[in-house]
Image (cartoon, rainbow, N blue to C red; front, side, top):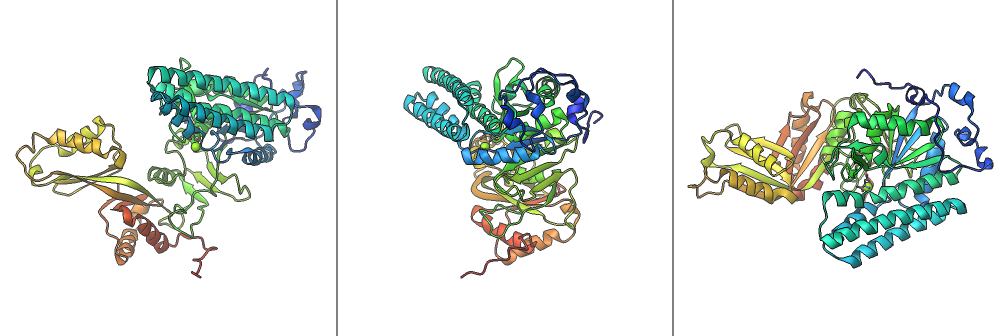
Length: 534
Ligand code: ASP
Ligand code: MG
């Protein structure tokens, strides 16, 4: 990409004009003198010409903090310290999720409103108000700031009330209303984090991503419009950064050109962070969560996991696709061209290095690097004698899955093409099976045997590693180990991706399969050998 500016100080490139942006949280002079806080000049009322002339050779980092990282006052305190430490060497744009659990509650309130359940709506909003007020009262001590924040929260809850009243009256929840309601969590957390930063001497400003990220109108899964977003970031964020103010941006949300609030999809704040990074040509993105980084396998399923120091974009995308909650699956999209490194780090153990995701990670000597799995899947088998000779079966299957808007997670086909296995999420399996029965009804009118069968208790296990396909012996070794432990493989998909081999097992075998493969490829932490049973 011609206009990529990796490593070039962003403040210099994009934010060269003098700015009039004011911090929401001007500081008193004592806090301006704190060591390590480099934004001091931002609060002088008289413009300081030297500041704009002095080139800032500081990298720009977008730091995203997930729901658990801002889960309560103590967590937000940790976030503030992480940001303060980072400001010693770089400029920072902060992106925050809603406090943990808040978006779920907002969605529940919206659904309750749709069914006319006023009581539940009122109870949820009361809880949310208490949760945010409790955090604010611990974090914020300055009376002026407290007043400010209280006013802001009041406005947001008034909006919540209006939106839910509308849904209650109409007994209808449009995607647009659902987005407006579910956006409120981030609109509450961002000002809270900004105020907490100010309380610790960091000039900050909460900014609604509706002012920055321009999206299409696909409510619930909106896509950013890159050029407009870049323009907005330049005019809206650069002046803030240039004055040494830390912008605290709401994750998860954006707005259409007409200004309607949209959301990028559940857990979309990671995506917000990379969208902003691309728009600002940031140096790095750091995703702060509650895990040490990308793990070799889900620790809830296998003991003795380890953190992977570096993985490639490909590997991360493959892991995200197969259910590892590493990143929102779209996160890498905005940075593919620039190759911006993305870190995954632990807010609760910032001394640990975390995982670096780069375009081409250092190979681990070749082989399996990590495992992931998705349960709650359904295997749909289309096939049988009646299918012999029917033309274009695959085409018609895909036409059907597309018509019912189903994501097919795995597909395999016998060489005779008479038997095709599809794996889909169990939540949509009925829809898919019905669609297929309809599609082939006339072809199968005279068949007595069932030609579309459904098995709802399957799971996909995926082994991920750069260039797995090219390494001989991996498949044999993996399936050999599984066979020795009596795990049967129902279907295999290898070859479509360079860096993953995925296979289907019975849901009850999923955990066992993960343990076996994890052990076979020695993915566990060398420092934590198996703890002997006592
Ligand atoms: N708060 C939103 C959610 O829970 C977005 C996010 O956390 O990334 O889905
Ligand atoms: Mg979340």
